[in-house]
Amino acid sequence: MAGENMQDPRKLTHVERWAVHASDSQFNALAGAIGGFTSGIVTCPLDVIKTKLQAQGGFAAIQKGRHVGHPKVYDGLVGTARVIWREEGIRGMYRGLGPIILGYLPTWAVWFTVYNKSKKWMAQYQKNTFVINFWSSIIAGASSTIVTNPIWVIKTRLMSQTGHHDRPRFSVWPKGANTPTSRPTLHAPWHYNSTLDAARKMYTTEGILSFYSGLTPALLGLTHVAVQFPAYEWLKLKFTGKPMGGPAVAGKDDKAHWFGILSASILSKILASSATYPHEVIRTRLQTQRRPAPGQECMQGMGGVAKDAAGGAAAQQGLVPKYKGIVMTARTILKEEGWRAFYAGMGTNMMRAVPAATVTMLTYEYVMRQLNATRAAGREKLRWQDEHPDMPRS
Image (tube, rainbow, N blue to C red; front, side):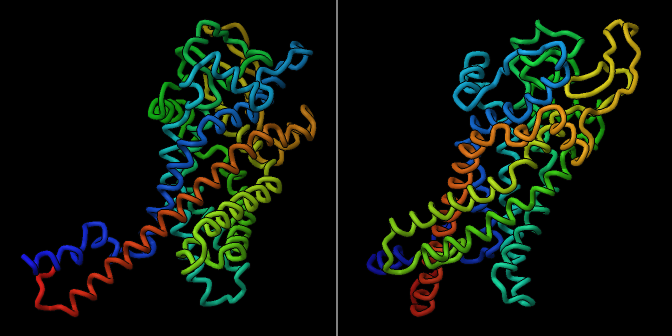
């Protein structure tokens, strides 16, 4: 019994046994996935508000002449939240949560894994830490963007449409500036009831390319992470003395350590968001715009002449997307709405992006710290077992 009591404190748990044999890539993938998942849950309502604000300018511009003076439906963080809550309730605030969870899990799992692997690889050829972090961010961002772009397109479309109760107000003609959706809200092929429903309808009506709408501006948005993460690494090192994902410094005040991570997260995200925000507006306009399908009615967010349900009211002349490519989209927005449109919803974006980045990084750092501590505890127990070969091994 005495020997058994001595063994129990030194017996490896299942988690410790896994951690001892797990690679750094597995640690980064798990910590990144948990961080992204937590961030998605916490900030989903703000993501919905931001998407509504970014997208509504494209809908209002279609019938600019017929709706002069009509106010925008969505105005600011509080105003937009009130409209969504009044018309759709709690479900409206969490519209698109499914794709967010499905998106953030692989996005950050891929990102942190590729980022840390890239840093190790580049360190063999480059000694400048900033250059290593910069290009590692680009490589990781490109990898995660290409893998998860279809999920974000679905998320953006789900978030930009309204609830089911608006469907009776459907009209085959494009609506005016007070319409907060990029598609008519009826039991039509382009109203999406769920993530799987959206994926099926997009594929059958628009083809595989619809899942990569906005991919080019999304890749252009790699400038965002190229600013954010080198800045975060530099700031965290200054504030805490440890690199990203590293354990706390022995003897250093724990509160100061976490405050340093919090400060680095906030400052780096504000810097990156301020510098690269316009590409998000362009990407949202491209993602919320449906691709033209032969025989289908003209959709909001697209040019051309509508065709009624009977099939003969108007000929479809010049049915082409309103937004096409980064340059053309930027020119269209600038011409119809002015330069301020490139910063539509930026305040809300800051209130969403900064908490999202903070939650992601704090969760990532916490999970990495726990995993490293678990690995260290497991290795210590293995050493103890090696020093006491007469004791039963776990």
